[in-house]
Length: 280
Image 1 (cartoon, rainbow, N blue to C red):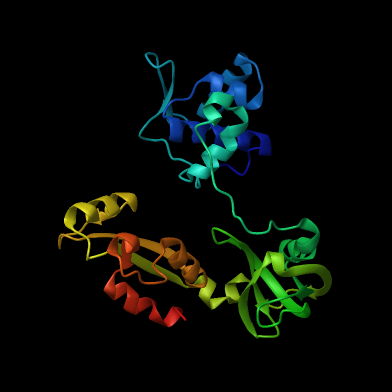
Image 2 (cartoon, rainbow, N blue to C red):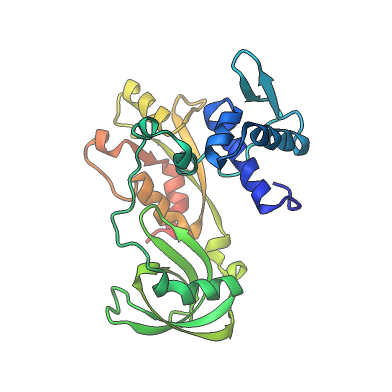
């Protein structure tokens, strides 16, 4: 989105793109329900969008709504189904909502009063002395860290930070802070100093070779793999080296299952060899 647009306008445009991307058709009713506005105001929102991004939407009279054209370029993040469900949930009718659900992390939620200091240090690029507990040090102890990025691994929130005790960048689980903190000045290290964060790795996955061809094909569909010239399915994902283990855990390739139906996918042999230096 253009940096010159107001925050409210960006939110309107993002919603328009979200609906077009996921539902394939945008009507004024979508905007009316979501923003609780009149039909004329909803029509104006669409025209404003077309003014800034002409030729991206076209009105289909037979469907009574706008559709995307070949020039439509979705905003980054639209491909996340959870974003679509979360943002549109507030304007969905109850009978429609009954057909959607999502699992949330069963772990303890992060309490704001425990991490306010960390968030302040993160926002202002500061060095901070915090109280933190870990498996190696179960009692809360003082840690001086320079945080640079918040990370959600699929079940828990972490903050990536330089740790002066370990003299290296580490991941700190947000629920393990006790809320005690003291700002120690400007951050000693930043994101660009974090070698593992700056290192991008290619993670190639393929169906477990023990699966028969028909089942391998289904697994390929599940993971959007493409058929290679050698007749095998494969997909390559890119990830920061600092986040590699989280991705492997999400893909369930961090351990080996004796049952191929349970394993489903594996790391490509050449990929596994390349990733070894970044694995424990």
